[in-house]
Image 1 (spheres, rainbow, N blue to C red):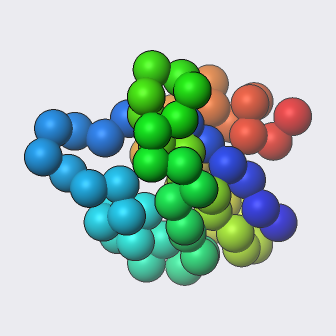
Image 2: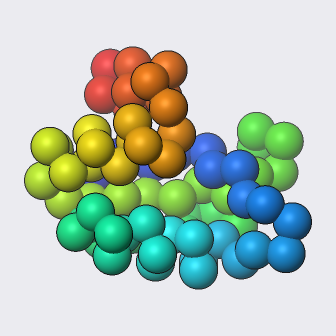
Length: 72
């Protein structure tokens, strides 16, 4: 399964570093789709892997509201 999410990056962080760190932590693959996306200029990051692992990542790193958006 593959999902793409608008991702808020803290000042000084690089989106590919955040994506790589989270992907490793949750056992999925990640790539930066768009460095400066349409939603306030935040990067769009795609995650690919087992749905259960993706749900775990989204809940922990993006919050419960993002689950509805990512898995609608």
